[in-house]
Length: 250
Image 1 (cartoon, helix red, strand yellow):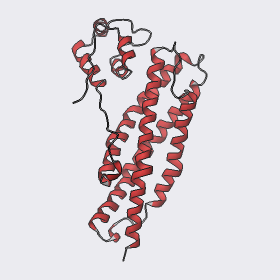
Image 2 (cartoon, rainbow, N blue to C red):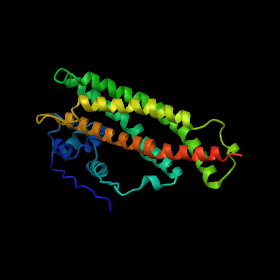
Image 3 (cartoon, rainbow, N blue to C red):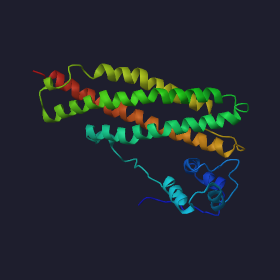
C-alpha cells in the first residue's frame, strides 16, 4: 500500500515545505509563496490566492506519497524489451518533466543569492547545459538506439535471419554514446556535486536553498540509476546478442 502523508492545514506553508521539499512544486504551481513569504497557514494562503483548499491538500498528499523501489529488483533478468520500456517510461519521462522545473528552481535561487554564493552562476550554466544536452540524447535513444535493440532482441529470441535487421551494427553508436554523451553527463554531475559540496546546505540556509538542492540531488540520483541501467545492463546485453547473431549469420 502506498504511504500517504497527512497534511496539517494548521501549519504554515513554509513548515509544510520544510517537512517535505516535494510540496514546493504544488505551491509553485498555484503561485503560493513558500519561502520568505510562506508564513501564512494553509487556509489563509489558499484564500489569498483563490485556491480551493481541499483540492490543494489532495495535490500535496499526492506529491508526498511514498513509492519505494525494492533493492531486490534484478534488472539484469528482465526481458530486454521491458527494460527499454522501463527506461523510457520512468527515467526519460522524469527527465523531460523535471529538468525544466529544476532549471527554474536554480535560476530563481541564483537571482537572489548569487552575491552570497559565488558558485551559483557556474551551477546555473551546468544545469542549462544538462537540460540542453539531454533532450536530443533521449530522442536518439527512443528513435534510433532502442528500436534497433528491440529488433535485435526479436531476432535473437525468435532466431530469425539477421538479414531482416538493419545493415549497420549497434556497437558504434552505443560506444559513441557511452564514451562521449554519457561521460559528458557524468562530468556535469560531478561538477554539480563539487559546486554544491554534495548538495549540502548551511544551517541558516533559506527554504528555497534547501528545496533547490533537494531537487538537484533527486536529479543526480535518477541520472545515475539511468546510466547504470544502460551502461551496465542494457547495452552490454544488446551487444552480446548482436555479436552472437552476427557470428551465426549464414
